[in-house]
Every structure is written in structure tokens, then in C-alpha cells.
Image 1 (tube, rainbow, N blue to C red):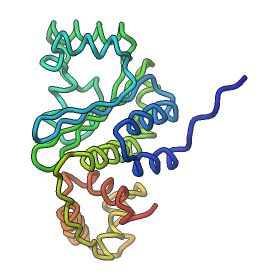
Image 2: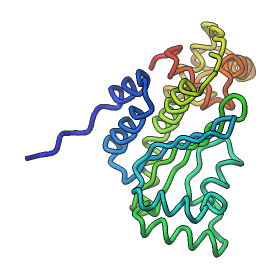
Image 3: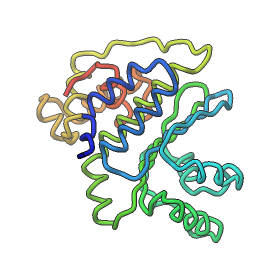
Image 4: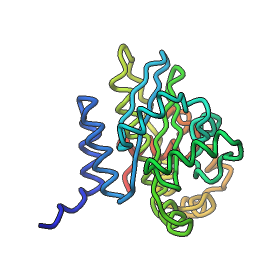
Length: 241
């Protein structure tokens, strides 16, 4: 009997957005792993108060080993992403120390994979989260995968983070500021893959004026950068592609 085909991405994201219990985040991440046909996906959230929550597909043995050995202190993915705002391929991180190389060898032995892509996400009041995809394959296959799916993976990271913030106790909702029609146009075209020069030409404005629109939208959305602004606008239904 053939296994059921992976769920469509839009259906998984709808289920994630409508989640009312933390257990539903675990279901969503398992469905996402199957959709993208990768070995593992993990979302790890640390609230401003220091509370932690994680959902993912690593084996219980590896999770227990990671905690017991306090690998958080030497994990180049955690250390590297905490200093970054942009998504990062694991190969770009510093694995040069003996401790990091030993950690990497052990992680691979536990099936984590030799390739990884992590998206750091920052929220209000010191909240920090990390969304990670990992797999075992050669560099060319992984480069093609991340190039094809980069935008979706960034969007998914922010979907998870928005839902995690919804579950944070005593959290006050962020006041929403409407985007202007020009800001909507600019973010929509960027989300569709246009370069800034192409967006400016399409809207018949200068790149300087475009930059003003983007920065204004980024401020209204509370976004760290343009990619974050696009992801937030998509997740909130402010733009549609």
C-alpha cells in the first residue's frame, strides 16, 4: 500500500495559523518535514522571560544527549545565529574548534544530517527563536534545495514564531498599522521575486523613493529587515501573491 502524499503547503500553514494548542505545532512541523522531503525540521523558542518551547523531529535520544551535554554552549548553529538577523547555511558557520567538530560528528551520527539551514527570528521583549531544516545530501543538491525553497522557509519561520507568541502568557497584542497602497505594491512585488530596481521601474518611481516606502512598511510591521517585512505582511494577509 502506498503512503499518502505529503500535504500541500498552504493547507499546512492554514492549520498552523489556526492552532490553539502547542501540540498542533508539533503536528505542523512533522507535516512540513514530509512536504519538503527533508530529514528534520525544528523550531525552538525562548521567550523574553526565559521560558523555552521546542517542536521538531529530532530523535528523543539526540534531544536528551544535547541537553545532558549542555551542547547549547558550543553548538555553532545557536552561537552563530544568535549574532545574526539573516538566514544562514550551516557551512557558513565556524566549525573550526575541536569541540564544534566533535559536536558535529556526534550530531551526524544521530541522523541530524550534514547540511542545515537556520532562520533566526526575534520578537518583542527579548524573544528569540530559531527555525531549522537539516538533511543528509551533497552540497549541490542542498544548494539547489535552499535556493528553491528559501522564501518559503523564511515565511514558515515567521508563521511558527507568530503562533508561539500567541501562546506566550500575558502577551499584549501588537497594534496594527495599515500599509499604504504604495507600500503594499512594493512589498508584493518584492515577495514575487522582483529586484529593487525592477520594483522601482514597475511602479515608475526612483529607487530612493522605493527605499522610503520599504522602510516605512518595515517600521509599521515591526520587522528587522525587508525579508522579515515581506514575511510578516504575507502571514498577516496584508499582501497576496
